[in-house]
Image 1 (cartoon, rainbow, N blue to C red):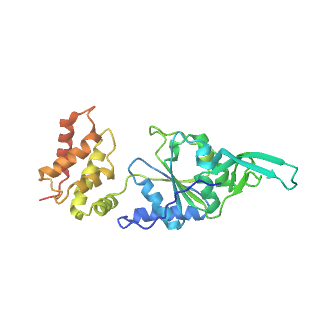
Image 2 (cartoon, rainbow, N blue to C red):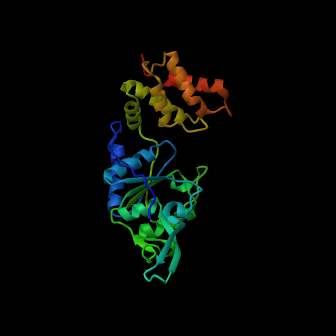
Image 3 (spheres, rainbow, N blue to C red):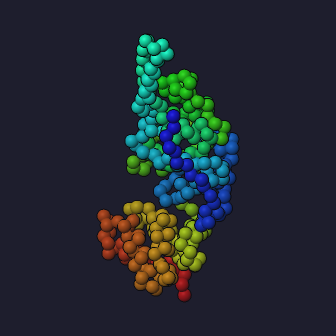
Length: 302
């Protein structure tokens, strides 16, 4: 028995930026998936792992199931479990004077998302899978290697397993294991997937993303990206500034321009970025000074 299942019908995004770097990652991933291997996109927060994973999934042209890793997950959260009972009662009065009564109860098995994907050949994007406890992901080992999903308690006609649909595929994303809130993945699972290490994009890609997401002129997008990249290179931060911060600044400009001589632009940059510099080492006033210095240093305005 299956629960209601939500799947994504992914379409190409109008504001998706396809640069040679992204094209290379996409083509490599699709090649590995075609060869029968799961793909694992590993990289720091804000480097675009989830966006690329969904982009790759859209190229497979299959319904997509998105799962976000969670430490509360168990195997049952992903595969399914026996939940509740089905009651059956039969009253036989075929002979008028003979009364026959039969009542039985059987457990009901409910599929979860991984099981449904295996049955119907859906694509799974398992986002931040290392936030789930390793034991919750153990069932994936036989799915990936033997193409068989073991079902406890002899469900599915008593066989206790289902064969994985040939169109089934899975894309994992994760932060490096030294990040807080993640678990060390079992070697057996890592050994069954191909890992593509990601980092922050090149300047061309980041500028294209900021421009596409905000609609601002290219020169303004580049000035914002230069600020983000210079802050990232300076090391003067407690939380790494990512392209998300650049998009926030760009979208907050409204009809203004990203001009270093514009007080309102400077204030937006300070508001968005000062929390990443943090107050533990510098304080708010020092954060504003660092951002001002980076804007003045990185300007290419005449």
